[in-house]
Length: 160
Length: 249
Image (cartoon, rainbow over all chains, first blue to last red; front, side, top):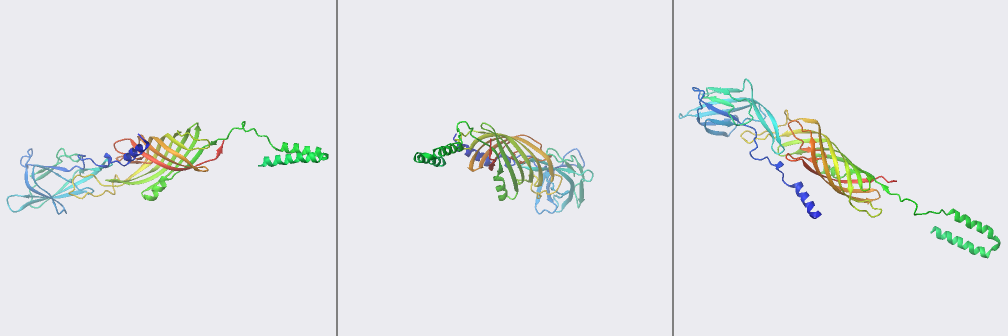
């Protein structure tokens, strides 16, 4: 190799794109809170909800309209609580609405240069939720796991 | 010129001797005196004095970058001394402060570093020249601190606004951090005029050990420069102006 090609190689090394600069897809980020819907009459079994409208407090857009037995709810970063409005539309024209406030703390863990920090939420010990019922459908709430390290299993159970 | 004049003087004296014989004795005395006054130097026996190189100076690139980039401050003092044949002992002492804004994190690194090692000159100088094309090695050590100024948490879901964290347990300065690395250097050094030399060197750095800050990383190390997540290699350069102390031994 000639000296010139060495210099070229060096310059390429200096300015080339590194893996470092891109946060790879699939890097586990801040975990959502996984909510499992259960039957209040038969606490062992899951019970699906249908057409559950989920809106965050103060948000104009709905998070989703959900049907199924478990959903992940994102929690608010840098806040002490996250509040969601959960409206269940039955066949009747009226909504059954519950407001659920989750109290949480968080700690942040360094991942890498490109990804930065990931947050891990911890549900508060005793008063981890505040449930304000309008004409509600939620009968009971139970904490399953209090540290949201991953999304592999449910953190909160809602009985209805 | 002086010798020629002296000889002319002597020759003219001898002529005058032939003309004025009566003053012969005094004239001969004069000739002996002038010959004695001239010191006889045998040039073969005296050892030629060589410059004994001790150089010191600064890296010009760092103050220049500091002028262009307000988030950077840097100063590096360099020095080297000729040890034997073509080996030079070399040191670099520097101080750096750099604020870096990456994709997610804004942090400031500040600290001091010391590098010492040797250069081996491969350039065959002509007599009287003192230039160098050299290869070298350094052992570097930094004493630095890392401060996280702010960061944006990595979030896949954007339903809620992701706020930039500006205060909290992770917004802090971590002191007493160290890093140790090895540098492989190639560079040139050219005598500009009198005792002033200018030099340029490329450095390939290999990190050997470092104390990682708690829940963060040494993303920048003074003297080592950028450290990537994946590997232990780094790169650097300097552009020096040095002054050679005129010591003749």
